[in-house]
Length: 246
Image (cartoon, rainbow, N blue to C red; front, top):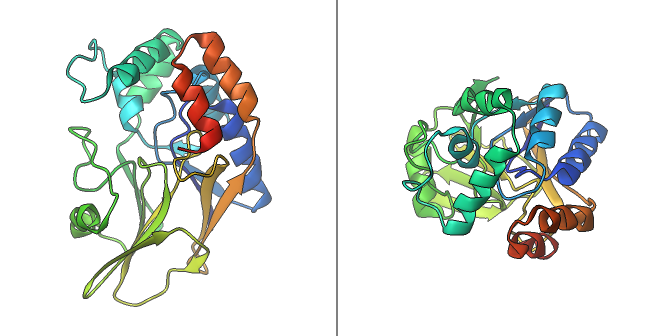
């Protein structure tokens, strides 16, 4: 089975379409989204419809959870521009789309693989920890039951390797995850808002027969997304960051 792994679409339909087509070219049998389908970007409704139409199995990310929340966001631990973006996103969605976001699961176990948006430190939406270094990865690995797991949330394609003696963190590159008595955590990066100084949409392929992971980068029409952000009245910084990949 060849899995296409995407995460952090963030309402960027141009990036999502390009990533999907790129993964199809990689002969993926199934595509899984690790969450944050909405938030930040200008096309939340189109992205939800695309994911549903193409049967992309999806998890719930923090932006999805906040969007489906019924509160005014005062209790969210986010900056004001993030809160305003989420509240704007709500106005762009139909009730059935919001309900669909609400019913997404926080975690998935499939083919002896585990999938989560943030960290297995918590998988109920109480908070959303970032796995950014060896220390934060350690909390995750304590709870990872399988040899290989996937997470998103940080928008950077990384590979964490947990073995006796410590944790190694490196940028994601093509690699066979076959070492005995080792656990791996793969982050495919972000489809719609990369933050590794590379503006191209980021995803990954995992082949369960060879246990090989392959990073995938594709170009998309950044200018079109940026113009939509400006036309929607969203913060200009959300448009500018896309071309910088940060």
